[in-house]
Amino acid sequence: MPLRVLIVDDEPLARRRLQQLLDGRDEVKAIREAEDGRAAVEHITGAEPPELVFLDVQMPGLSGVDVIREVGPAAMPPVVFVTAYDQYALDAFRLAALDYLVKPFDDERFEEAFARARDQVRLRGKSQTADRLLTLLKNEDDVSSEDDSSASPLERIAVETPGRTRIVPVSDIDYITADGSYAELHLASGDHYPVRKRMKTLEKRLDTEVFFRIHRSTIVRLGRVASLLTRGGGRYTAELEDGTRLKVSRSRYEDLQDRLGLLR
Image (cartoon, rainbow, N blue to C red):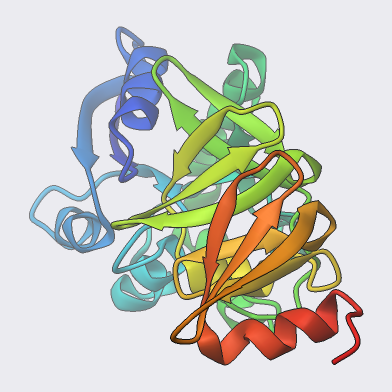
């Protein structure tokens, strides 16, 4: 029987990509979208729940794993998780034998995931899905713990741009600034990209030997700092090799000096 499918992602481009891949298939009866975790819970617990869910992992408010907790593993339909590259998260999916798509994914990888999910709906029923989701929730390395500083440092960050998802190597980043609900990555090339990540999350997931938070709204690569400038009234500035100047908070200035190996 054709499936009711729910796409859950806070990024419109990501939802559109999945919509295009699912549209027109005989195996799909209806496609609905949810732009956040709360809307996803309402769809899944509603009168006509989906039989298959493509679920983004990292969303503001309720994360993908939070959605599962709210609905309950026994009531969840089969799930294909969708995530930016994060080895910490992928290990958790593998341990629970759950399928996932890593952004950006190609058509072939999508076809594999969809075929497995379709077979799971038709042949295996909900019991196996519930067992796997319960394993995920019980796992100490839960994917919802994106703020856990014990996770391996980030090596790449996914950036949504019109028509594509760009993977930015962390090694290309000079500094990061806060920009409302987004952070902005500033690359050595001069390019800059917004990402929906909290500064607190980035601070904990970046290599602390390489990056340091010099202000509540700024994280800098220590190796790019060329000099420190002191002004009257306890105002401090870090000047990078390319001449960029970044404000340093008074409370972090001495720690920055220590991190740079400066004698005081």
